Each structure stands twice: as structure tokens, then as C-alpha cells.
Image (tube, rainbow over all chains, first blue to last red; front, top):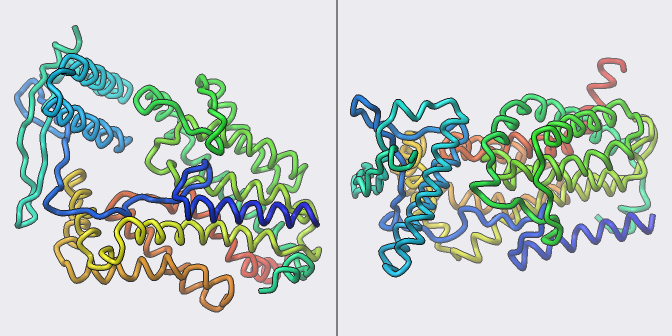
Length: 148
Length: 276
């Protein structure tokens, strides 16, 4: 019984600690998701679209939808870093190149034939005062540049 | 509830054993249903994009597995859960299931419906491992601290989420604008109209924000006022359904089995009605 009591309180203390300290101690977590302040004016995401051979442009959709979101966020970070720090241009370009190749590999594993597409379009998506999405193409990257 | 009482009193039936069987059965079914999808995700090599998996207790880096090891751990996990259901070597089965859990789930932790959403599984398994009632027949009297601890673990998910909201946003969280912004951000990722429909109404967002915060802060009341249990469980279900529909946040899948902790009495009643 003593072991059970010690165990009981150990778990309680761990739970209390991660909650109060705001720390991760996997699998104990403090669940901070969606808790910070957020402002409509600052909303802007980078989404990845793919241009088909016939010129149509479609959003990159993955069965595992966090991939497009994660990749978009990463591209946005790299874009902002590039604008703020011109000296690391080459490094940031390489990082972006590596990320786009990873996307191509994921597409291939999801049986999407990259040969049917011409280019990646990186699109900045914001929202206007009527809550309508506004799309702005940030960059177009031909796929043959990545496949080389 | 007085603490010494918690460790010295027994329930007339083996509620912990009943919960263990229900929990493991449902979890085995859920993992089996998602087995192929999880394997497909593993094949996309998420560790390459996201980097190394989590460190156990912040210390131990869990190893990357190849596809055969991954499949073996997943199958081993399901098999061990089934052994617990059948009450065959339950302690050994839970111990192996725990090891398999960490090896298997750490490979695919970046998958949207896993991430932190499966975190309670190993904690619950660990609690069951320490339970003296696990291998007793269901009609035997059993200790009750295990179920109380599992409820505390579940309550912490919501309580901590509320504390983080207050810590990071203060009372500003209640005005609904933060929730509105999160919904809109989700909308521009996904084009889901449900998110936009809610976000278009700021007053509704403020009401929802307030209700969610009150719910998260007070979920712990179910420990002291069991008559409130089903109100809170019902609200939790609505809350998770709402986040699933509007934001694609699916806590129901791997948090669902933990909710069975509130249904052991019902399971015993059903067992009696059926005549088992």
C-alpha cells in the first residue's frame, strides 16, 4: 500500500509541476495549444499550391494535413528570415530547397506523380475586413529546378 | 474525499479491473483501425521533416525504428492490450504494452491525431501497472485510488489548458477575439466553412471562450460532486466534436478510451442486466 501512496503522489506532483511550470515532460504535458493572444490583423499563412501541366493551380493536399501546414509555416519562417537577414541568403535558400525536396518526396510516397506538375506556388494567404481570404503569390518555383 | 480513506476503502466490485478491460479493449480496436494509416504515415518518414522524436521524461531519446520494428511494436502493443482484456498475465502484458507504446507512438508522434492527444495512454497504463486489483476477478472488492488518479490525470489536461490560457492571454481570452482569430487562421488553412461561420459572430466567440474556460477550470468538480459527471462528460464530448469540426483537432480518438473511467458502474449494471 505504501508504494501505491508514493506512486499516487508522484504522479500528482508531476502533473502539478508541468501545469505550473509550463514544461513538457513527455508524456506529461502542460497543453499550451491555442492559449496565447492572437490578432485577426496579424493572420497570414503561407500555403503551397502546385501548378498542373495544363496551367491549373491546386492546393497541395496531403492525407496527413499537418504536412502542408508545417511546410507552409517553415517556408514563412525562411521567407521572413531572408527578408531580415540578407547575409544568410545562401543558407536559407538551401534550407528552402531541402524542404521543397522533402515535400516532393512526401507527394511521391502518397502516389502523386510530380511529372504531372510544373511548379510550386508559394502563396501568402491573409484575410480582409470582410473575412474573405486574400491570396498573393510570393514565389513560383519550377519543379525541374528541384528535380535536378 | 479524505485521503487516508482513499487508500483504505474498497469498492464492492473490481472497478479498476473493469476499467482496465474496457480501456484496453477500446484502445486495441482504435489502434487496429488506424494501424494501416499510421503505417502509411510512418512510411513518409516524418522524423526526416520534423526531426527527432520526444525525449521520455525530457531525458531519454527514443530510438528511430525501421519498418519491421515499427510494425512489430504496433502489433505487440495490440496483442498485449488483448491479453489484459482476457486477464492473461495482465501485469506482464501492461509492462510490455508500455514499452511498445513509447517505441511505436514516438515514431509517428507528429501525426495530427496523436501529438499530445495520446499522452494519457502510457500514464493510464502505468497506473494500471501499479494497481493491486488488475488481475482480480471482476466480482472481487477492489481499491479505488487508481480510478481517482486516472480522473485526476484527465482533469489535468483541461485544468492545465485553462491555466495556460490565463497565463498567456489573461482575461483577454474571454473577449472572444483570440478564439475568433484562431478559427479564422484555421479557415485560411482549410477553407472549412464551420470555422468561418462561428468566427463571423464575435459575441458567440466570446460566449464560447467563456464557457470553455469555465469548463476547463471546473472539470475537477467531478471528483467531489459525482452527480455532475455526465454534464461535464457531455460538455467535453461537445467541446471535442466542435474542435474536430471547426479546427480538425481530434482528441476523441485517443483520449476517448480514458473517458471510460466514468462508465465502470454502468458497465457493471449492463453486465448484471445481460446476466454475465
